[in-house]
Length: 511
Image (cartoon, rainbow, N blue to C red; front, side, top):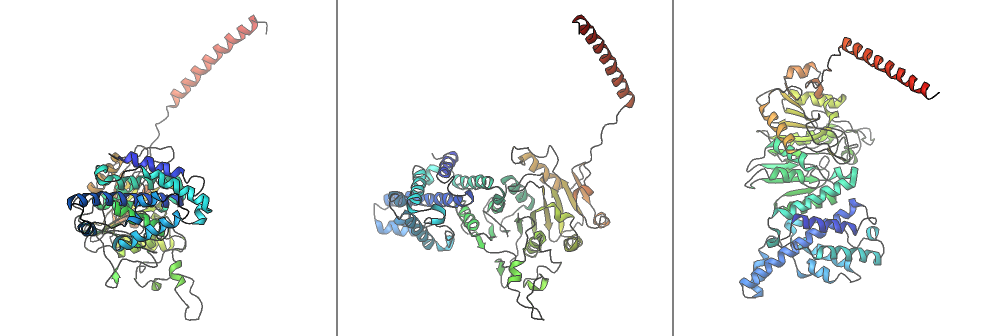
């Protein structure tokens, strides 16, 4: 049997073929793409062998049966073919051709998924000799790995190994890692907060490699839920599409493009509505409005429009206010709220703490979100949970059609609410369970949770900074002055005795 550990070992070995030659933010794409091709090849090979036996070698019937399978792959696009040709001078070209053929044969699921990767890249691999040596090593690394369905044990192993490696690459990539991966335990928390249900639409407008979407989708045990996402970075978008495919979510709709200036969740010329929205958008994105301004044209005086206004957005998402150019957090929030189903839609978004108290246009937006009764909870998380930033973050939970008008605050950032790590802190299952159960009961918990009325929030001028509502101050124990005086006197007495003895010793020594 092939275990998750076996796959991880091969993937880690493949990394050695690239280290020192290509940055990890780039070589992850080559390694994970090769894993994807190996998986498709091995599964297809096993299916073909099964049909050959079933139909007594009748090639025509075998081909007809294979055409009805989940995906199609030709002999020249299999891993085995590429491995056999590993010593050819044009092996990079052959891999590119194989990928192109896989896209062509599976256009409904994998269109353009390999467009941002080039195994014949001189920029990444260097001259022919060096490039071929790297690609040969890569193919050899995967040659012994058996990814046939019968050898994997469970269907989740390959997908879980894929996500494991994405997490490893995110850790190695430092600041860049946060752009395509949300830590698994944080994704688990967010997915539990929105509670996806059967026949609902789940959406992530900044989906990265798809971990948040998959965690949410897996909460629907029957698998009867529709998955949607959008990702701006083409390489990360490709990782997400492959990630969905490897986890068996074939009908996921993952779009590529800027969610703010070019949202793809359009239906009947309106923004699609979703029952569950989850997201970890880039923190405080600078120049988030550049896509709008690039197409804004000229104003009435013939001058180029250089400031974002609500009127520049055809989807009318910024009628509650236009966030500052240097801070895109509320731009994503407003997009998501406008994409949230009006009849009980739930949304959980990970954001920096600045969204809770910054003023100006953000303060005005925050005030209206409270008054419109859409903000349901504010949950403070521990610091250093995310790749690329050590700052603490929070989760804002929104709901449409709320009957209560309070806002529930949880401060889960204190010691004892997470596990300290050497490089990164971790939310444990027990920490997640505590947050979720407290959120559901909505009962005050000393130094941990507080249910604030809207009037209290008004009195705080709509500042949502958690310490204003959850008092975590630990009173210091009162100092007994008389006891301190007595201790000092005892110490001075002991010191005098020691000095007296020391003087005697020195006199005996004639010093």
